[in-house]
Length: 78
Image (cartoon, rainbow, N blue to C red; front, side, top):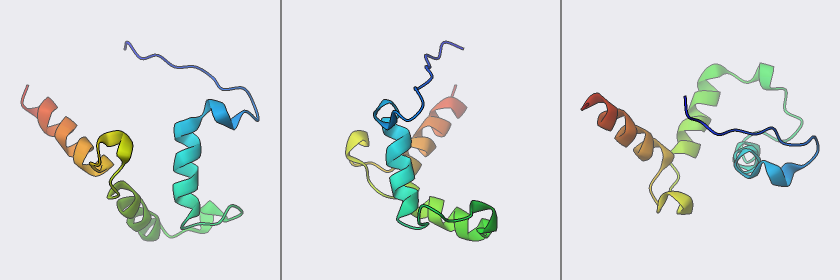
């Protein structure tokens, strides 16, 4: 597949920057001790749509959703 990956050491959150950022975004909607199994699927989808519609500096102020659509349209044109 040509994908690089590594395993972070336990309790070393600085090794998982993207993961920690995503957790922080989710915690804006669901506090740390929230039982995820009790979250309504539609509510979770709404939350993910809100998160993925936020412009990100690392994406040159595009949204993750825009970048995803660009990737999909690019691959469909091949």
